[in-house]
Length: 102
Image (cartoon, rainbow, N blue to C red; front, top):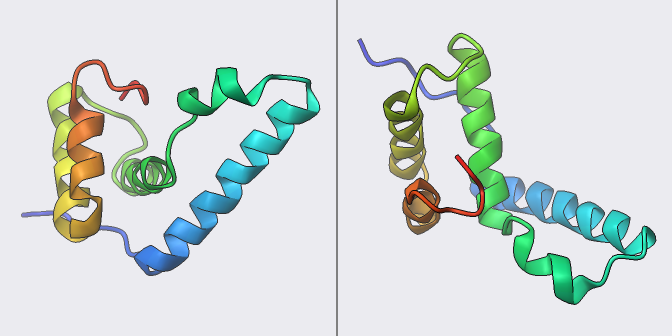
């Protein structure tokens, strides 16, 4: 039996929350004197943050741990199916040398 996907707010709301979180990350790094030219490309995009939030919700709702890479990729594929506008971001994050490290 396929486990249900935990429901969150709409994609627009998730993106707004992620954009706020990303702006906080930028602000904190600027406060500590970091050069934005050096760190901006290292930060996850808004959609990457949304995928990470959804992935975290799934993990929490289904046992609290990642079993293996195949299981993790299955979760990411579920996110792509549930939120089609995030599909390209999910596929990029599944590449072996993704900056998100998942």
